[in-house]
Image (tube, rainbow, N blue to C red; front, top):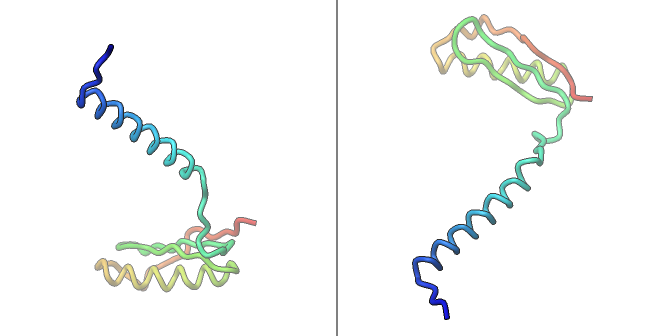
Length: 93
């Protein structure tokens, strides 16, 4: 009769938990999460400092939010908020 030691049992349990965790993680990684259901986005950047990315229901709303974010983040990061420009803007559908 074979005797299973505590060490063998803990190794088996650890491998089972690891496999279960990886299987659950792989199942969730393929899901895409929408950002509040908005279809359009825009990205604005200053000449120095941090820029801003924003989502909106319309292209003009996304551009406006992006510019506001750019000016705020550029000010906080020591950049130049008055040089913000929208560099990318599009709608998914």
